[in-house]
Length: 68
Image (tube, helix red, strand yellow):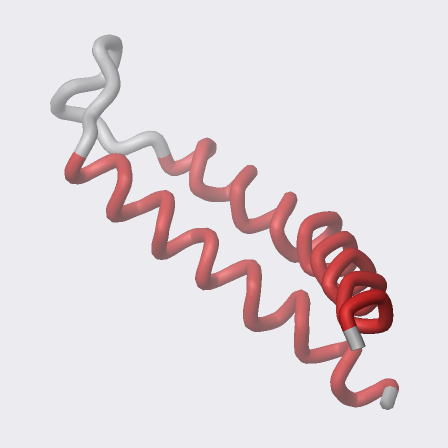
């Protein structure tokens, strides 16, 4: 069980980072049309790894118990 819990932040952080990178290339913001915002991607990876992976796991685990 612990092995699965350790993998969630390791996987979700880079996935969020790739998603943010693509979003910045496809939809550039008004202030930085030609610049890539590395700090924004780093924040997305950090938030996904430290917060969202555990929140999503808890939420979907709760929903899974309620639906069954």
